[in-house]
Length: 315
Length: 315
Image (cartoon, rainbow over all chains, first blue to last red; front, side, top):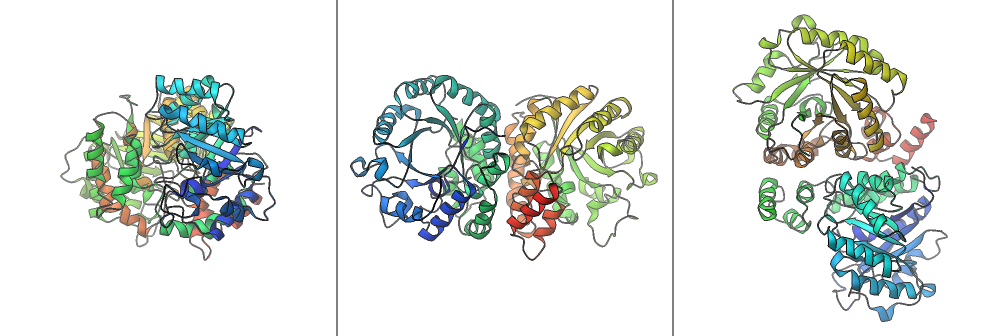
């Protein structure tokens, strides 16, 4: 698959940080950043731009906050065309502390929102746009919030929002390829002024194939993470996506080294990926929080009871 | 997805046995068999029907040979509608020792063949048919052996072969959903008298999605294994497939118990599933044997070198 409009965005530190409270040290984070630059990945997302007023700084690592100084330390001295991204949640950013893009260590801001909260998301995103940043808007939980509410949110995004791309976010890893195809077409139809992006979760081992399905149907902004690291089941694995895209600008080898040198060991310390309760949550179109709680409980392998509980509550 | 023609075939003991030289003990094998019966799986494949003349019985477990007596012990006393399958390789079966179906512990025989060997496969398969068995023919390595050779093999299967179903076997886990869709249509067009089956390998986490893709395009015989156990990257996970099929005759819960009680532990002892060299082999459309050798070597995580070696030999 070669299409010059395609952009690959790595969100290992940002989404993977949800596994370890963003406690990646600077050396690790720089290694990830440099390897992804070498691999030719277009955007590298280094965390959330959260206000330190809202979270306990002693409990979370630096990438929960993405202070400019911490970001400068990551990118310092690396010659690259890859751009840096941060994610912004509505109501959690201290907008007074945001410098203009030309004075900031990041290039792209992605605003994550539910369909129902799209007004506030657009307002914040347009402020970032006015300060010179590239912007994307990520519509979460599309496996649940479909129908007229989603249609209207997309129409509003197309008309009012400065974002260059609008993302389909399968937060629960619940979607198969047919709904992904349908949603990609819907997003393109409702937002003809935007690129469409895909952020897939891997609960049912469909993260990669759903990303391919979105590409087939016209999505050009593609999220992935190294070794699939991300909350719960994680995401589309970057190494598979790069192996699939035939664009010679990408190089798989630095990512293979990064996995061998860093992520095999990290996976021993933290759990993500194909784990049965995460798969069950995906099958049941459920938020992963209950599955994550089960895995931290005294009976992490009580699959049947967990399945029966979700079957009941879903009904 | 509900379609009454769909048949699910579990090949955990047969394909999973390629991971541990078929050294499952009787208690384990009976537990797998009984749980799959309870889950309502249509066919349960318990191994290869190899002649003991050809392999060292001290090195392989019973399911490399599937002696009738061993099979009778597995199914003894279990009331079920599920049927038993064995796999037969051309030239490896002692046909003189095959009793008629009515006196045998298995119902279905699947003959695996490369496109180029289809003559011999058809001849053997038709003998099993004449003895009263159900039969399927599995065309291996279709990611490599395409074009006129495959077309002719399929035409011959349609005309001469008694098999009720002809399987697409993605032996290298190399195919994406577009080639799977194309192949499913090709198999159906060339073999209008047969059902089409899908046996996917999971090198690129595409085993489940490729199975869905085949279903969408008309495949009705679906292979899967418990917790995805199978050679190298393994297969489409049964638990995901059952979760996808909405047919009320299937019950996910006995499979969840089986994973919790047996397969989580087994995965600690034997390696299968998403392992980077297996993924690389899939990306490069290569037989998994080199990747399996790497994993047993002194440098199992030397991903870059392995990738560069395959890149060179592929060129």
